[in-house]
Image (cartoon, rainbow, N blue to C red; front, top):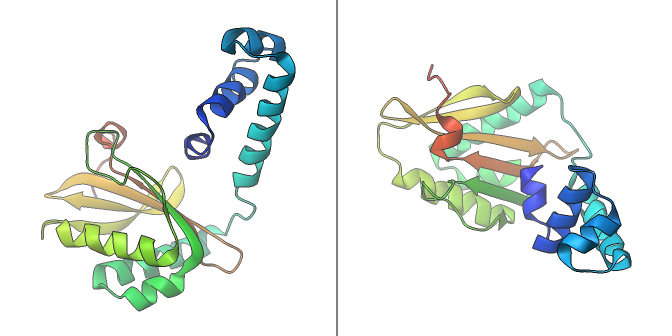
Length: 183
């Protein structure tokens, strides 16, 4: 949901959160934002439509997600750009989260070529002591990346109906990784 909210404009995000999370009326939101109720309703409608459009329409079975994640991990670690491109949907989007503490992409990366080359570039900068292993990330098949025995990143991918990766979330924010235990 955070990723989806980040795609909204600041005004849309404010209206969406105030209405759907805190339960304010449109009149109250209009007063808070110094806008008319009708205007706020329109912004809220656009925000809801945008959020609804970004919801995953397909939830691949866990075994399929694990298989594709493992194949993608092998392709990444092996530096096999062609195999990576086969596993990525043409319109794949990748989000990274460094929390302002660790280097990460500032904007989402869009397109198979950009995403694959970004990942390969990141892996080239990792020290030789890095390890990538399959892991459950929030109950979903993912990858835990460690460096010098400490958690560095977790990666989760969503699949489209063709079994290709349509979204990648790479979390490097140390505040979100502190609870992880390395295998």
